[in-house]
Length: 295
Image (cartoon, rainbow, N blue to C red; front, side, top):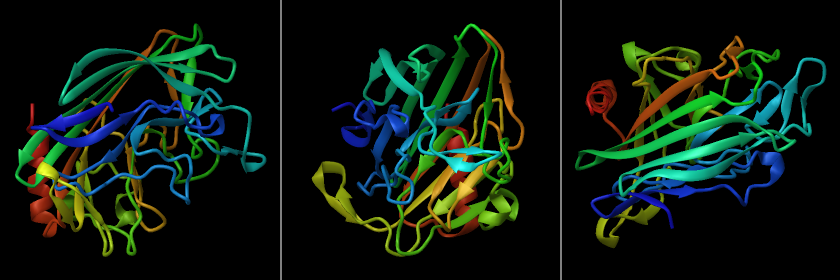
């Protein structure tokens, strides 16, 4: 099993996605991701969206090719299932360490031709006795031999659905998570589409379950996830909490993103993963600052 560990504690499992159905856009992803006490904080193949897979990079429209999976939103017909699904394929490991993986990937269209190459880095770092930080970086290069552009359902006529890029699907619980962000923002409506310096999901009642923690111990309880973008780009946040819990920076929030022939783009997502439910905006802001200050 390919895992990401800290001090012998398995915090995430890296999956190659080769068992994913073609219509769900096969791709590598992380699942389960767990707290230090072993509580799962990701979901795969949930009933509400079978094409959601843990933590990964998923884009619904690369010049018409879906690397998101499922149906495609079209201006004339709405959301329809098209024969336009691509796949991301593992090529090689560029670095293998217990707490860090660097992977080369190939993004191919339905015809099998490569459109993008990717270098993806995932890294785990400790923060305190209850918190660790997952850092994910994607570097994409247009290798198609032509100009490409990245879109979303929003750019195709569905306002507010600008998803696509780095994406974290969290588990559903009996109650939706609380949503808090920088600058005193609270709630899905306030933070969806914002460029807040950070935002957090704090699990609702019934979240957490039980999991194996350090040394094989078991733990139960809630969780806190604090998301920030430490790179040069701060994209609008795509956020869902009421219908399902999912967060990711949006590459094409309301405008297509050009990627010329040979062009490159880089994005990063850093997430503080904490056992238990954080106590208020002050604690969340401190977690975000501590995570941002990690090297």
